[in-house]
Image (cartoon, rainbow, N blue to C red; front, side, top):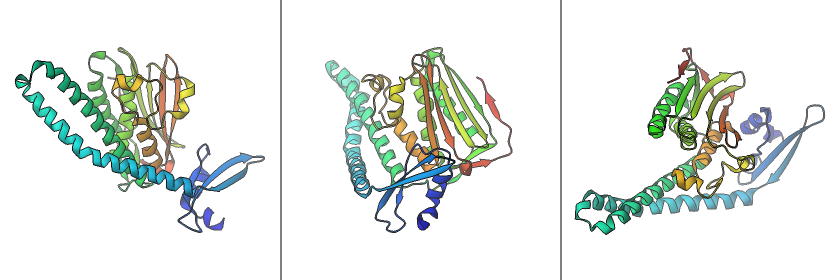
Length: 300
């Protein structure tokens, strides 16, 4: 216990307000052993801690991760070759028998989806390989969100969705800009995909004494509460047609979850079926860097 309470990740976990998720760390006595800790409050601000050995489970999970990463990597090269030849054939479509034209277009479309899926799987494998990003530098989140908002407007196209951004430029994050862009763009692009024409999407970034927060709120189709606890699982489907209709891989929110874990943050999801959803990322104060700059509010 003496060695455990000195562990920086345990100290950080113990001092946080929420113990909804357990903490898994190497054992202070033997780094080849993985332990999982659960903390619950009781009585007059007392804490009860349960510790269990999850080494075998961790080893099996690591085998699964390695298998997915290796298979994804091995499939990438042949798929790139196939897609390259399909692109060449379609560039010379006038020389192709007309009855094959549609088939080639569908093959190219599905090949593109497979490439996106493999890229997401490889990104997940990379995120799971280490606990923290290597490039832990201050990131101007207001500028990042402005760029994502522009991409979201292009994705929205002619649907005339109203996308607004309110960002406090004085609040920056320490972390990986590439990873944060991936997570935040997943949340915003999901809002665009599942919000009908003329709908509203509101992006907010602000800081307070509890840390920094990103909120993406939409007036879309909403999600039944029974699905919320499992939304960040890989390939989880709210319904069988949801992702196929929108071109998703089913990995977007899993990527969001792992990026946030690496930046000591958590994801909160609330939704009302038929009225829309709100996805909020909460970052601890230790990840926040204050910068004396005016706030950015863009209502266009």
